[in-house]
Amino acid sequence: MKHTTSTGITFHEYGQGDKTILFIHGFIFDSSLWQRQIPALTGDYKIIVPDLRGFGESTDCDGMITMESYVDDLFEILKETGVKKPVLAGLSMGGYAALRTAERSPEKFSGLILFDTRAAADSDEAKLKRATGVRILKQGGLKTYATALMDSVFSQGFKEKEPDEFQGFIDRASEIRPEGAIGALLAMMGRTNTTSFLESTTLPVLAICGEFDTLTPPTEMLQMMSNVKNGEFHIVPDAGHAAPFENFTECNKLLTNFLRKISF
Image (cartoon, rainbow, N blue to C red; front, side, top):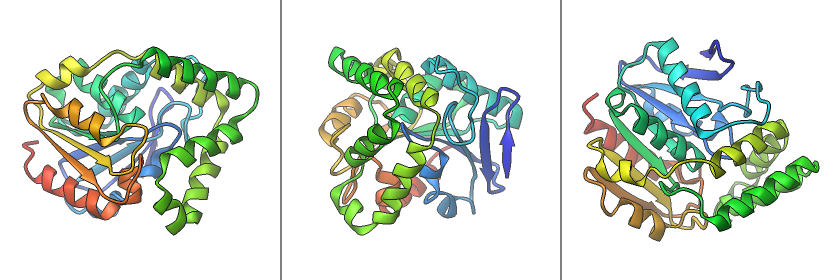
């Protein structure tokens, strides 16, 4: 079922369970990223999948976004749906948003699932790379930018085995409003470091990384999780930066095993 919040964020609800998972997509995706998780989980859980501001059907975006803006939008979804104590799951930029959302009000959540992401803030090198992306997008280079980014996101095996799906992601990314992508780059550049929160939280944390992820490599995510009190880390074979889509079978097994242990 599709809904739109009073602040203009579109999201879909699936399933009838009283335990909820809120899935947050990454850059430069939309909520379709999670289509391979929904069938595996809706028998036991309610699933909420929003389009972040400026992506998918959440088109109300002026390009001036902070990470706090995304977090505000996520809290508005929880307020309007009345959902209590969900698990937050995010990939890449969605992981940044999940971490900051939980950091702001940890008592409102039951757990965290982090796909192919990091808790650290951007380095100067990363900020300059995002600034270059903003420049390209302002010059009308969305199609070129989206194609190059998706090429780095997905593993070579996925691109060869599922070329139509790969092209579909490029096409959807190429159709978003440039303001959405520019706003996301600015939000990621300005986000805070959530490492201290991740290492101090008592929330259960599941971290998953694709074996061939070159953007947030397994070695980096392993280090990120090394001091997490109640965390577990898994490397998913035959997947790049979009592990839950590329190897959904393995990821869904990890998800269901983790969720069974959660006290909602």
